[in-house]
Each structure stands twice: as structure tokens, then as C-alpha cells.
Amino acid sequence: MNGYILLSHGSKVQASNDASKDVLKKLRQNIKNIELAFLELSEPDFEEAVKNLKTAGVSVITVLPLFLAPGKHVREDVPELASACSKKYDIKIDVLEHIGANSAYVKMIENILLST
Image (cartoon, rainbow, N blue to C red; front, top):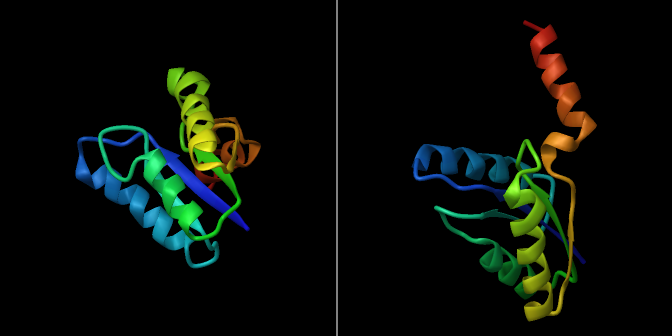
């Protein structure tokens, strides 16, 4: 069974974290076994999301980093976390390219700009 993690940076500003939680709530209407995790500054963290999905019977986790650019978190921190949790919980974890690299994201920006 597949599971998914939306991985956000996290913020000291609760409204920012709540916005990510709102996205998760909407996605859960159509996607089963999806969790939100924060890299820092908020909860749940990545490991907790992995544990939740493992407990739910998921055998493969796909992670979507909600980052616009390939900074240190995307290049180093996320792959290291995924590798460590994969070993610790004996679960396959695939990390997708950060959302900013996705052509659909670029198209969405174009559509928003051109529709105003």
C-alpha cells in the first residue's frame, strides 16, 4: 500500500503552518494515507509522519518536498532524513523533486498571472 508525505519547512508563525494543514485536509478528500510533516519549527516532524504511515500498513512512502528551490534542505537534509527513516522503520521512501522543479507548478503560476 502506498502512502504520501507533504514535507513543508515549518514556521514560527502558526498561520503559516495552519495553511499547510488546510492543504492536507483538502487532499485527504481524495488521497488516502497522506500525512503532512514539517522539517523544523513545527510538528509533526518527518519521522512522526513515517511512523504514522507505517502503522497504517503503508509499505512505500512518496515524499513531495514543498520547496520552491533546491537549497540545502532539498539537496541534503531531506534525502538524509528519508534514508535514516527508511532504515529505522524498514520502509521504502521515495523523494520526489521539490515542487518548484515540477512543470505543473510553473504552468499553475503562468495560469494565475495570465488570468488576472
